[in-house]
Image 1: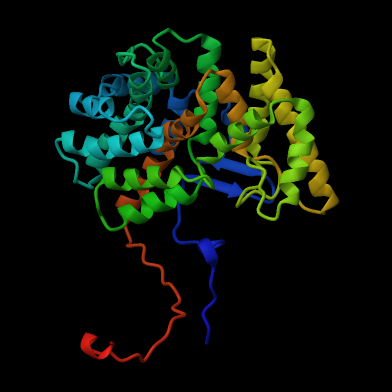
Image 2: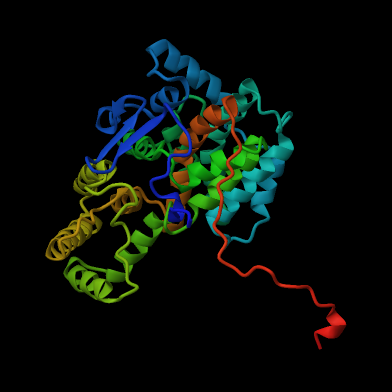
Length: 380
């Protein structure tokens, strides 16, 4: 009897979790009982506390959590030097992946997978991810790294370490929203990779390094950079329609930022980011990227309706214009995703290590059998 093959493990439940629920038919994303729309006024630290500890923090708990994190931003000198020695044209995701792996060498206990040690590493990685991304960005522009400000939040420090200037309250709020929306998303590719890697009881750094590698792909975290690349190539609102039509006419064409493996309706995160993008456009006085995005969404909706299909904008689509209006270069978009998603990855690793089972799916063999070995001298 031929086994049923689920390519890409689509629709296969491999474990249970209390962290996140997604209903792709209804467009719902829930973090530990809270619909994502309920959390858009929360700080990133509040949402991390929710994901890691099960509840939103009180004011005192939030203050204590931030005090716990503040001294952990600083990077080992050896890691900074390694980033400094990378070629300046290194993809920032290669730099991040390599640096995360290297952090293990500077950890007093990198291999312990008991809950206390994994949570210690998790807290460190939460704030070192933005420090790594910001440090490499400055080094490749021949600028000195910026020492983090212990008074700033994770979102505020990320912006500060990138620019060297105190971020505005509005920019920090936008960054908080972006981090919250990208913090967690169930068993996506990178989270599955993290849990699967950890299931061998290897160390946290190895599991997170693997997750960063998975996130880099253009079908996962790399999609937001591809959206911006497309918008830059199009160049104007007037040229959007023809671009979409030409792309859809190509059998191999794909309009990046549309469609999702899970959602069959509008990605709820995209709806929130659309509003953020509109506000940023109004505040900046330059609405070009937002208007191009709206036009692309309009044309795609029209063309998909003609085909009787539901292919809606996903979170990557509007995050591209948001990050551009915040001043980020496009090759930093995926690292920003990683800065947010480290919270979700770690939440899943806490669950995985606490109740571990080795991930060992099977693959159905379709090759030959019964072949006989012939010594090399007889093979001619």
